[in-house]
Length: 406
Image (cartoon, rainbow, N blue to C red; front, side):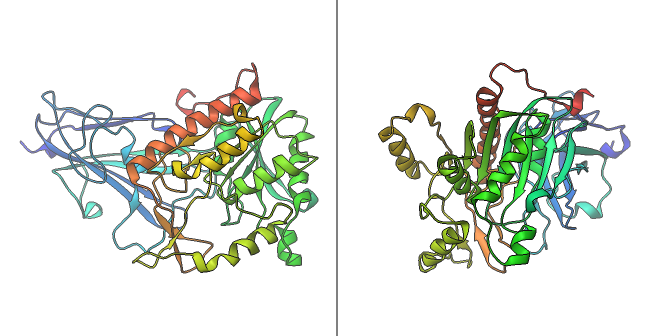
């Protein structure tokens, strides 16, 4: 009897959850020993399709449990409960340089999980699946308030956790790509941190004057958090990635206004003139343009120069020694992920080895190996949340929302 003639069951639990929550995929009521392919398909907001798939063999009870059974082939191998998410890749024929990023945090990331007979590798859309389930992955939990901020010339969005508060705050900075990026701030708000996502490279003031923002711009953003009635003004952190780490370190050390309680830096570039503006920092980097390297695929190679969350242990020494000389080594925590790439995102998001940068034709090589990078994202996010709770909450019970429990 063909598998298609049986009442095959495919379940994904929870089918609705935060992006950093694990789910369990189970196939039931197939013939023992059946060859099966589980496929994931996501259409991003920019209209591109992403897919992942894995090959399984049903056990003696006619069941496959993705959390327990190994994938024998596909976009990942072995027992990987969330492999169908972190191994997502553009479908064959897609344009080069794509990166999967959530734009509208008020809508879910929808992923269709489908089951196919046999070990398939292509042509999924031309076949009728045995079963399908649509899964919703959210960055913004129910009850999170999204508030655009335009005062003081800021280009920002404040995301407040559910409830009256007061909440600890996080000033959240992305890297040199510019634009307002909200999804990590939304996820932080879902975990009880009032988070201000700030665009500092393409705000209105920059577009109108042609000049880069200065330190007062970040201090105004900090004051929005500090003075908000639902935020504990004495418990504010900064979280930066890439160039955002550089800005975060500069503000934490030199600003007399910003009294941040702690800082998380991911893959930062810290080589910069001490007293310079953002424009000075970027000009300094442009001086080193002759040192830029390209690989055989004409991809610009981006290398981290320092961390707190670094991707190469060779680059952590200078920061560690600086803190030791200052007698502050007890204030520094270093996480090292040797085979991860530059873009450490929230967990289960696909590894981006290379992508177009700032809309240019040049593809930047961010590096990393897919499995190691995925492990790094999961571990770094868990430890980042623990670090923020330890330094910001100080005994205050966090307001954490799980969509699967609603």
